[in-house]
Image (cartoon, rainbow over all chains, first blue to last red; front, side, top):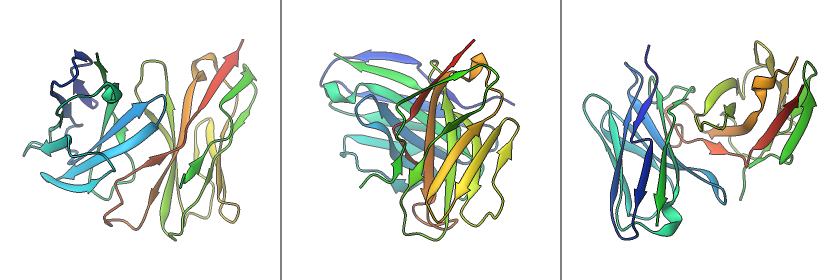
Length: 113
Length: 119
């Protein structure tokens, strides 16, 4: 069974640009969560989607948004990029909204210059 | 307020020996889950073990066991018979609230402990 896939794996953008990251969950999983990992702040929860609806949101500015499609694939978008947005963005999928196990993808490493 | 505390930034262990990675947590919820993840240098987070707040027995998964002391709010990870491949960053995480609650899917992570296994 294929794991969680994230594309692209690496990305370099310029301040002020916007970026879209993609996450394909494990087949059959319907819940997708996103996390940002930086050396200074560690791992922080961004948001969670289930059945195409955002169920939970972390403390991030409105520049960070996401969505989930009917096939459970999810995208997150960051507009007006700032240097501080440079991070590893991890996506995790789980079978159901109430599932305790979350399986993570390899992450997308975003560098903002 | 930080809810997951990992006080060991780095730990060293000799191959084939056991090592304990510390984790303390803070929550006012009665229902919560505790997790340990391993993150190799590749970046992917690998799920290791889970302990529910109502589980009476400590969780075990192969060489991993979770020493759950509810009254002390600690959830230490014990790795037995360390292997070179265990060298990685280890994160303790917590999920608060009852199943299906609005915060159920959110994991709060500690700062991590870098484990180095020496041959």
